[in-house]
Amino acid sequence: MTPSDTAQTYISLIESGSLSPIERAEIGRKLSEIGDLRAGVGIITTNRIILPDVAWCHIPAGEFMMGFEGIDELEEPTHNLYLPDFYMSRYLVTYAQYCAFENAPDFNDARWWDDFSDDQKYQKIDQPFTYDNHPCEGVTWYMATAFCRWLTHHWNESQMPMMVWDIDTQSYQEKAYHPMKILLPSEAEYEKMVRGIDGRMLPYGNADIDNHFGFDPNKANTSETGIGMTTAVGLFPDGASPYGVLDACGNVEIWTRSQPRGYPYQPDDGRENLGGNKRITRGGSWKGDASYAHASHRGDGIQATSKHSWVGFFIVAHIG
Image (spheres, rainbow, N blue to C red):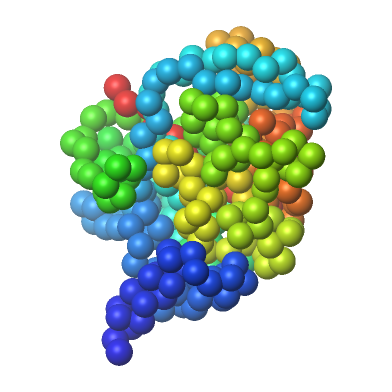
């Protein structure tokens, strides 16, 4: 059996969802060693530049229910919020994908680090779990933002089409190039991605509030799952969001571009601007329990300068 055949066998096993989470995690690590061939997980070469190979999910424009009442006052009040359409990466940004930025010849280009204090410029990743197909962690909010600026520039310069996951056909469809801006998701974009338009509190549905809304450790990597570290991205296919995003409530929490401010959420009140020392992180992680995993959970923010083994990021694209 060739390495490619072995990789395809491993991919079939982890995407089937038939193995236990711990077994899938072990296979995911083996897949990293021989090369993970899944679309959207690794890197590609375009115009002699190594870039992340991003797969996207489309989140249509419209209203959704944000917040929840009865758990934490930081999540209150429940309110409806309209968002324009956007695209979110189907997978968390992986270690290999972040390293494409860090190893790029233009990593030190001042454009990616503009408006940051000198001590936050040109920092390097501190990745505890160095598997190419695991989510990147050990990055500050500034590092994640610089990655987005770099990728925006090269995506537009290369005029690459988008590879978009189609929910109906369960396959990728190519979307012609349009100018885009790549960003960290806002709190609101993250929450809509998880909840869809039916107000669910977990990507796969709803249940009793006293049972963490029916949280299932077979559908996300949290402390209950028992793995004790990050996993290869996308190992929990049954935990996909209504739009197809994977690891939506586990593996690592994600940096958002939102500063900690009260509800109702107002995108234009300055909370999504560059300033401020803290940023909200969202989603569950391998280190936290199910109480952090529901869609509306939000703390009071963490320092934007901090690096953690349980914080990574998705990216979003705004077209036009």
